[in-house]
Length: 198
Image (cartoon, rainbow, N blue to C red; front, side, top):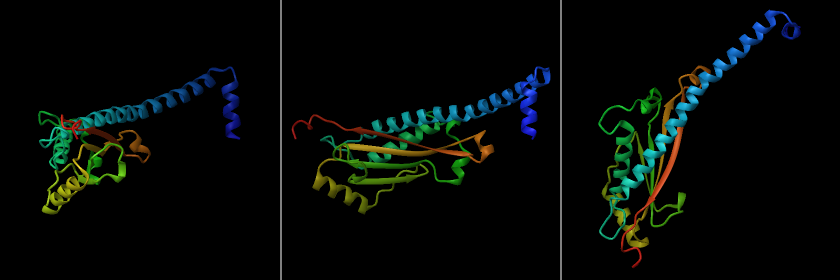
C-alpha cells in the first residue's frame, strides 16, 4: 500500500515528488561513492603488492651460486625485500600497508616455491612458508633437503612467490566486511652463462 502511494507521488507533477526522487538518487550516489573509496584503495593496494612481490622475486634470483643455481638464502632475500618495500625503504611506515586487520591474523603470509624449471606449480621441489614476513631459520634438515634435491634433480633455477596480505575496508566495514585479503603471485628465473653449456 505504501509503495503505491510513493509511486503515485513520484509520478505526479508536484514539487514534492521531484524532491523525493532527488533525495533518493542523492543517497544512492553517496553510498556508491563511499564504497568506491574502498574499491579504489583495494585496487591500489593490489597493484602495489604485486610490484613488491615481483621485486622480491627479482631480488631473490640474485642470490646464486657460481653456476647460476639459486642458493637456499634466496628465500630470505625474497622475504626481506618484500618486507622492506612493504614497510618503506627508508624505514618509515607505509600507511597503505598498515592494517588493524593484521592483528587478527598473521600477515603477510608468504609461500616460496623453488624448482629447476618453470611450470611446476604445486609440484615444486621445495616449499617454504613465512607468517608475519619473518625470515626463515634454516635447520640442518632444511639444508640437507635442499642439497639432496639439487644433487638429484639439478640446480634450482625458478622461484615462485605467493603473498597473501590484508587491507582495511573503511566503509565496507559498516556492512560486515572490515578486511580484505589480497593474494598476489610472481616468479623469476635465474640464468647464467652455464645454462647453454649444460
